[in-house]
Image (cartoon, rainbow, N blue to C red; front, side, top):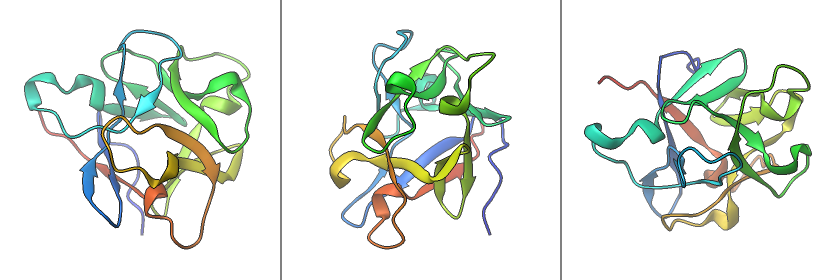
Length: 149
């Protein structure tokens, strides 16, 4: 049974069969629109606001930047990079996500999920949108971890 995405500022943790790593999407530069979302090791409590996210009606909002997860170019297609962007008021299909069975998926098309590109385990690996896999899918599995400051 999946836990809801509701705690304020949860961490998002990825698990790969080769190595377990903290991957709450580091943003570089933090306040830039269209900045790539990448995986990174867990940062200390005094400097982790860019790794904390809130969930509201499908939007995953970064605590530090105030921007939401988005698909580069807005196209609901596999192999598109995940970026941060200002939250839109209309035409939000490319900014709304759900969480079930370990997958963070597009609400507009649950077959498309967040994926660590190439199953890369290095810091800085890009997060992309990809077709949901039923097996060999460790790079698509995420846990929502409540964060206590």
